[in-house]
Length: 63
Image 1 (cartoon, rainbow, N blue to C red):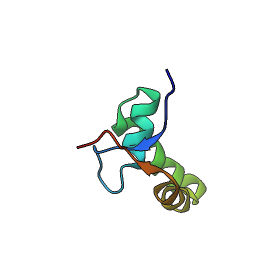
Image 2 (image 1 turned 180 degrees about the vertical axis):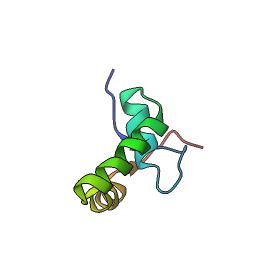
Image 3 (image 1 turned 120 degrees about the horizontal axis):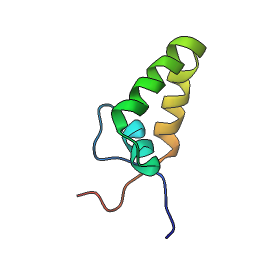
Image 4 (image 1 turned 120 degrees about the vertical axis):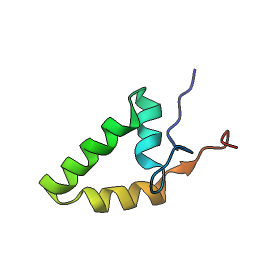
């Protein structure tokens, strides 16, 4: 099965963390918490989120 990374319809802002959570079969809340920690610790998490939101495609199977 060919797995693809898409933005999720389960979104809080753009669906990036939800899409990563679905791709990795992990709770999206856990991904969101990691992303916040990364943004606070490294400082470049916000820029990475914006880039991911621009680059990632929307899920074509979402209604």
